[in-house]
Image 1 (cartoon, rainbow over the protein chains, first blue to last red):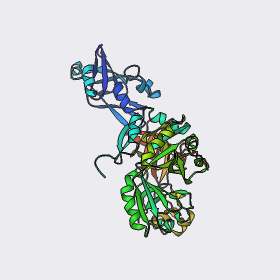
Image 2 (image 1 turned 30 degrees about the horizontal axis):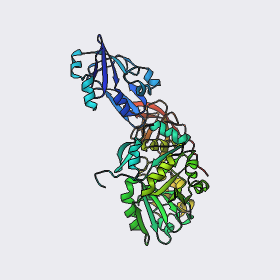
Image 3 (image 1 turned 135 degrees about the horizontal axis):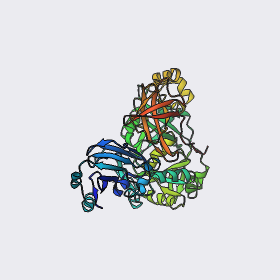
Length: 121
Length: 365
């Protein structure tokens, strides 16, 4: 399964027409200890670049921007009670959304792992 | 202020300890170390933490009747401040606003003053211009560190037994590692602890000596902010500024009785009027009911939807285990227990007015 990366430090994996979106380990490390995650609800439509959530650390709030167009199928409810999971397992259990892709061709605009590694140096 | 951030005498130590350095008020300071803000915060509440606060302005005042002269620019009773005692205060302007807050200590043959890093450029000329016959000397060759927490007495007292004899808001000179330091039992965390002024060339050795204690770990500005917020302590520039009066800021406790009655300080008209009639707004503690932190500038609404104020400091409180905030609400609001709404990203989130501090202060009285 291919993993794609955005310049906003999100990752996406795709199975069929359903994609899973989360934030990268690098992003989680930069944010510090995460204490709150605000998510959209199932059924919400969004376009690439839209703010689709907020992650708050002790110090500051950071927006999550949609890396593609789509519709929320499921928000990871476990993050509500345990936002700290985003620090422990941001690229595993602590995914943020399952979404239905509107246009799979948009994935081609994203980076692969090598490209993302180059971005974060 | 220069464009390049300044470095404190402990800069190299911060880097060695893995401090994440940020620009704060023109100074390159550690916001956190590898332990992280939550861990450093809990370290301070449970054991002891070392903070570098050398960016703050240290000032020596020399001359006669310094306390009386300070009363012309501060509403505190500094004329009666005894040798070896420290007292919190602030400079007020003619409109009764707070120009900065500060700690004044009577060191016997001089007074020792500590002001905020961001305001030292204002405060030093302000004192020089208004304290007739007083020599105002800004100190550039000393570090200032804070050792805070229930184990602070052991961390500092093991190296300097005289520190154990101080009680809250007392100050003395004492040798630490054969270096003469000014040791004051006070701080900005709500915990027992000390602020220690150290000659810059010995600062790193003294800091390392504190850190060698098994109960002491370094903490950065991030934890300093969450600690002071839980302790209900104001941050200049956030919770108080040149437009807010001490009465609005719920700081009337810091104006002694004689000064409240006699006045004779800048802005006394407004401050005495607000003492008698109440202020147009007041600073209160606010506890969001949900998990979303309410940050600075978040709007506060009454139950009927009218705007009654704004959050001035808000974060996640690691000891409280949830969001905590302070903010101003207009007259007629702000009773402990009052339900309000906080407008966070366009949505009303329920919150309650609570008494400050959020966490019991643990001073050594």
